[in-house]
Length: 244
Image 1 (cartoon, rainbow, N blue to C red):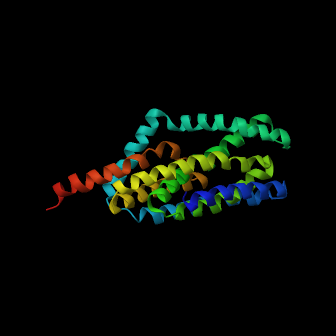
Image 2: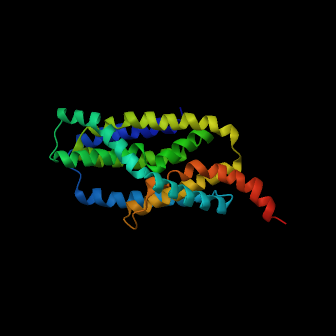
Image 3: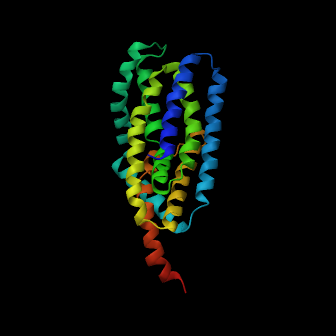
């Protein structure tokens, strides 16, 4: 199991514990502004990743086609539905704690953290990247953001936030292990384009977090599945045709 997955999971666990201990002591001003800082960090991570791009047309094509496919299958809805299913067993732990939030607000908050920690573009990208290349930079960077995000949510929801680490470990672990099987079939150029594609998702995530634009990040996720095949096709079929 890549170390990045373990670190990311532990960041949520300990963030939930710290937030529970803090309770309502964290000022709202800090909570609101930290989210903006998280967004700026995501944008910076995305810029660095995009710089690894080898075949720009292939990556752009993958992002566009992948997003279109995401819209067609309504991936965002499927992810939300999955998050709703996961939050139900997690919500049972709320019976052992207390919160001032209404039941509807608790459900909405739990769905939000399940999506953030278990199905975010950065998490999926980071897990696959760590599995294929052994580079956990994205996941470790994400862990820093997740720790403080968990603290913020746990101030209201309590220790239940730490429980989200269980499905997170299962999902990210499965992605990382599956990616290890794919790696022998890849080339350095394909890996570079994959990282760049993930960078675009990180940029979109950052823009959402800073409230610049509500990009459909969930619907963009299929781009990471098709970017490497498109990169290979571009390198082996298209480049020879356009190179003189």
